[in-house]
Length: 486
Image (cartoon, rainbow, N blue to C red):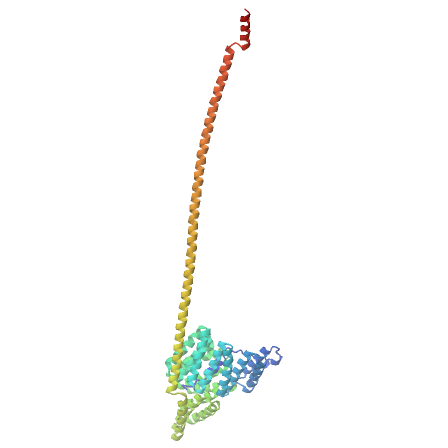
């Protein structure tokens, strides 16, 4: 099938980030902490969401009741989400939308952006199954916007891949490949195996639409290897079915039937009615291509019965078209006309020019808002850069002033040092001159004193000579005395 995806991508997205545990082995009621016990009920319910909806419903109600009692907000978000999962899997899309919206409202009230984005993903998946492309696209855009804001790359990748389904089903392969490429690049960047496998599968669908079956088989085989390695039983079943379809279109009918049988067996073990319905439709198409119209009709009718129970609009549309072609091969033109009329009625309600236009408008609106946001962010970034430049300029100016002040101070210190040094050298020189002069004076003084001593000594010497030559005073008096007497 070109336009039916064998593995529900929306359901795959809804399991993103949830914890899994062997809840059947837990004695939940023995857990003392109320919030931990509530989340244990949620995990137990989630384990059975795809295999035993009765148990899953019971556990989800236990989680809701306890969370409401103790006013545990995250428990209410989880329980509403789980009840939405169960309703969606049961084909009750309106009830699923109601539960998802209740979970979303709480997420928005507490500003839990990440959980809100996941609920938008859930809602996108349900509206995809309902064939409401406009609303589906709207929710994917909201989801992408939030994941971009909070920088959640894994969420962005899955949303891009999910959005690619919408464009692929509308025949817009260019846009489909654009979003697949975005999702694949991010998944490879963060080494997310599930994201890579999902992108490879979506690429494979487009290769098949182009008749490039070798490329399609190569993509599906790589994805199957990843799912097998991760132990993803549902993913393995989905890839068996994809490979069966690809081998059938390339003429390997025996291989195709073997792979379809493996796929259907796994989906029945999982109790996955949605993919069982898709599986019957694919097997019917394989028989139709082989020319076995009786077997084709038989499998188409099985698929239609389940699709109606599930209210799986896209699958109902496809099976109506397939039955119209099959009845035409029987030359039952009345039956062919009736089924073709039913197909047209469903198709007109799901996919028409207005719907495609609305999806394109939603995508354009998103891109416009994204560009506007980028412009705002750019302006804010420029303002921030300008503010930073001004801060840096002020800092540079302050540093320059500090440098100038330091340089000025340093120059003043040099001048002062020079003056001090000059004064010191001048004083030293003066002291040296004074010392020299003092020494000269002292020398002159010593010379004078020496001369004076010599003079005194000469005087004393002459005096002694004189004294030795002249008669003493006593002698003279004695002579005068004699003269008087005579």
